[in-house]
Image (cartoon, rainbow, N blue to C red; front, side, top):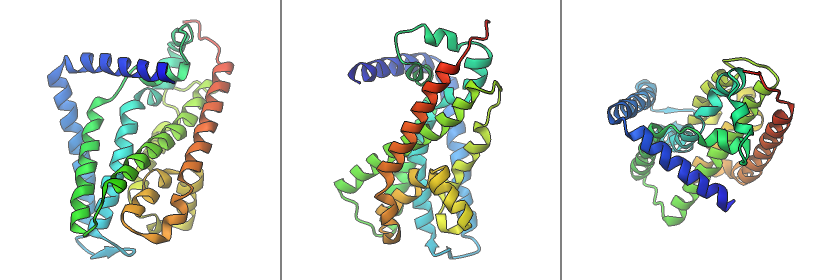
Length: 263
């Protein structure tokens, strides 16, 4: 594990040097990311133009949920870009052959070959929103609360990675440039809002089939002191472990099934 952490740091620093060599392009990417986030936040303001609360949730509470959700999602966006293009770049174009020739686990190589550094701006935005809305709601968060936020964000990151890694593995059996990740990626937005505004079917789907609620909504309710969801929060480590294990097993089976394109 120590070796892989060291390699990850080296990969990240080298990629950051290359990325920041083109400062203008990087700045434009950061601004574009921030504008997209601003549109999402603006939607929360628009929703509350017509109602003081939605399904028992006040404006600053939903804004808190949105800000909290940005943190694990932005961290996921930093490291997941190669999963999004895995089918096209690695399977169809045959780049996965190069990965298999190296004495490092194939999944680690795919995850660490490229990073989306501009997504870190959403991490800063999310932390600012959490701090701002906590003050507006009169919530007193001590060091243990911020430590919980960090741990929950890490769990959320791993859950997102596990879900999309499972979807990525489909490319080992079905060679498709687009894959099935894009439509599921659009469902990430559902985890930024209160779960009880959705139908029971959607709530079940977001909790137990594609557990985006565990990545964002459930842990955020701890800091909002919404006690009705505490039993779900206790299951967060278990859900993370189950999905991560399933994703790694599926990846290893996919690698064993892989046959070179010959290109």
